[in-house]
Length: 187
Image (tube, rainbow, N blue to C red; front, side, top):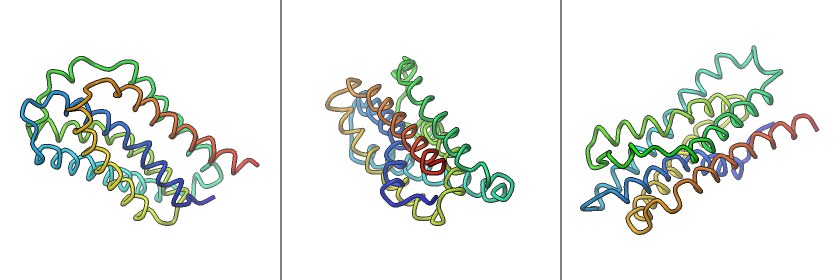
């Protein structure tokens, strides 16, 4: 089974929800919000969300011959795990985020790494299920950039109201994609 562009877009949306939720938090705590803050956060989040699945896919390619008969189960397991983790984290939002100053470069860098770790596991799935990893990585990076930029603006305006709901939605999307991959292979 190969991932079509619509599935890749939904995968990108699911992965970007973490960065979107953190961007909302960042937007809500900025004292003096400037366009450059939103652009920097969006650029870092988008770049890290693009690089991590690329690294994961390279690792997956090395293992592909060994795990090819089980690729659908591995894809399902990884996406279900990442989606479940996102849903769990939506209910365990840390108050420490409020103490972070997202205008500092090191904070943005740390948040970029933290929000893109899940994309590393998804990259393994990409190497198993699509021949166009470059296209998928581009879509993931651009989607995350756009949603992160928008998240800062939403956060400035609405604060934490949407944060956990967005993480839950992203987790459900990833789980649904995993179920779709498994069912397509088994049926």
